[in-house]
Length: 83
Image (cartoon, rainbow, N blue to C red):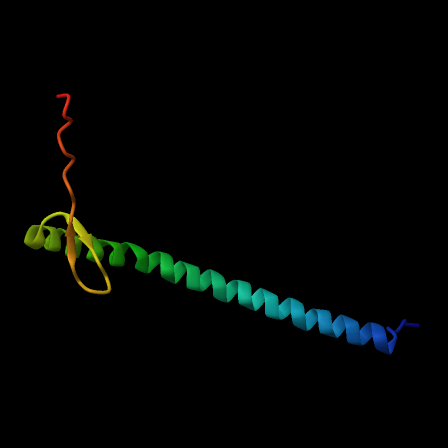
């Protein structure tokens, strides 16, 4: 003769199975998204590097204020007075 779970045990078991499945699915989705982002990263980094090189060639070395577009030149170190 087979044994049977109580109603509370069955509800708890079903609930945990659903949560377990959702977590597994989220892990899979997150893993896929991470793979996609890792695949995209080198291309975007390369584009940014190319644009930086173009901008340095056009405007010189400096820092770009991303809100105003102003290029703030790198200041060269002043010669030491004792040199």
